Amino acid sequence: MNSRNIIWTPIVRDKLLEFRSERFTSEETFDYISQIILETVDVLGNPVISKTYTQEFGKFKGITRIVVRKFPFYFKQMDNNIVIMAVLFPSENK
Image (cartoon, rainbow, N blue to C red; front, side, top):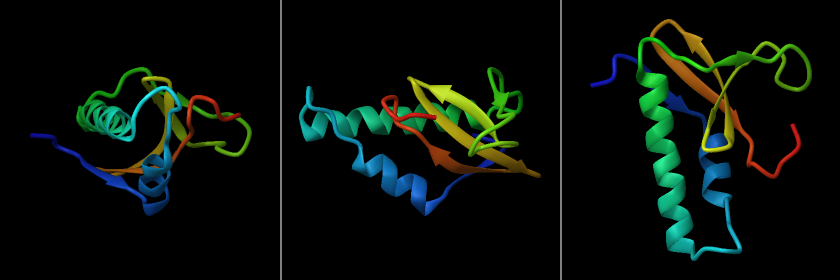
C-alpha cells in the first residue's frame, strides 16, 4: 500500500478525460489514460521519487515535474500528500 496520499485536482482529472487520439477508439484511449494514472500513482506513491525535475522558469516555475509515458505531470509535495497540479499532453507546448 502507498504511504503517500496522491491528490488529483479537478482540473487535472477533467483534462485527462478530454484526451483523445485519432488512431484509437474511445475505449482504447480510456484504457491508455487509466494505465497512465496507475503508473503515476505507483511512481509518486514511492517514498523515493526518482527522475523528477523542478522547473526553473516558465508557467510552472518552482513546481516539480515527472514524465510518465510522455505526459509531464506537475506536482507539489506537502508533508505526506502529493498534489498533482497540472498535466500536459505530449503534443502541447510547455
